Amino acid sequence: MPSSSATLREHSQHQRATATGSGPLGRIDAVVHIGFAVLVVASAVRYAMRHSPADNVGVLALATAVCSLYAVIAVLSQRRRPWAVWMFFLAGLWAVLVIAAPSFAWCSFALFFLCRTAFTGWVANLAGGATAAVTAVGLFRLGGGNDVAMLLGPLAVGFMLTLIYNRIEHDTAEQRRLNEALTQAQDQLAATERRAGSIEERARVSREIHDTVTQGLASSLLLLEAASRSWPSPAAREDVRSASGLLRQNLAETRSLVHELASPGLDTAPLTDAVSRAASQYLPGVRLLVTGVPRTVTAATRHALLRVVQSATANTALHAAAANATVTLGFLPGAVTLDVYDDGAGFDPSSLAPPSDTGGYGLRAMRQRVEQLGGVFSVESSPGGGTVVAAELPTGEKQ
Image (tube, rainbow, N blue to C red; front, side):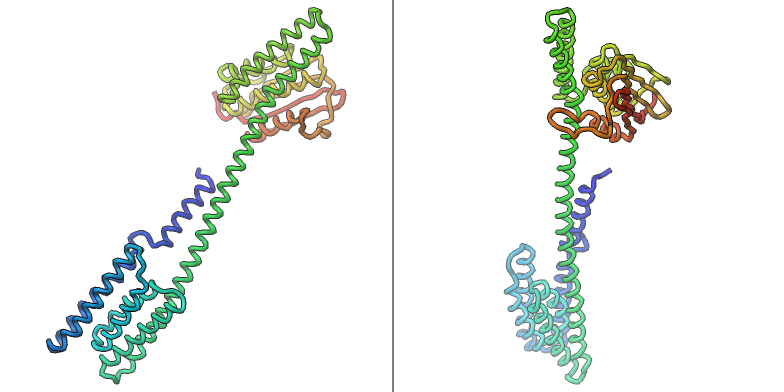
């Protein structure tokens, strides 16, 4: 499914294409040029058929000059060169031509649109009005000077076309403004998505580091401190060996995090074995109970379960002083449950300290992992009453 920014980007591109007149229906200038050529030829033929050759020379020469200048303007506009100043000369020549030969008054439609393209604001309105006035005079003469409709008609049509063209220009400007606002909103949304993605990635890496590196180092430090107090007794030597093993595992997981943020050896083993091994890293004597029929789960669910086990058992080892601990993995229709129980000191879940340099991330990181996958996470504990960390996650797939 495309992201919001991608959708906005496609819509913005479509709007820009519409506003700039690209596409087969956007080449209005070509239609205007063709219309002007047809009208000039028709007017020239009409004039030549109704007048003597002596009268034709001057008028046709003037018509040729108008056509040549029009062609120059068309080429300049096509090549994006300045051409508005040439419109004054074209309009002047055309006005003389229409007064001398009213048959060419029909070319005013093309001249009107060309003036509106060349000029803006009151200059455009003035140029359009002058074109309509010259056309009215030419047609009035063409009608013998006694047809009022020929005089008023072009003026009324010019007025209506001016209103319509002004409305089109207003709508185009508004569309351009909306396009710019849409582009700005698209850029802001993309920046917001990048920031949100960066924050989420930092939170994810923070959880990974907490559940592996931090917990492993804390447990190793606890064992080494215990060994230093009882050294050189056999128990101290055993604590040193255990700390060395945890540090080796911690180093392997740290290297794995650098590459793919995946636990070495845990992703390929059956889920029950992986959970047992993850819990035993911090609680060597922990018991594993399995209920239901084991089956495969998605990689994301599996990863979350292993991290929750690691974090919960590490907390038990560091803080609970428990005599017994049990991990229960249950397989339900469409879901898998995980319970980590210990009979240790317990605590008040409602009075958790905020995260700091000394800790406080574990339960929050576990809850985030589970809830991001659509699962349910809970903690039941009380001072002196032990602790139960429980999570339920969708399996996502079945064996």
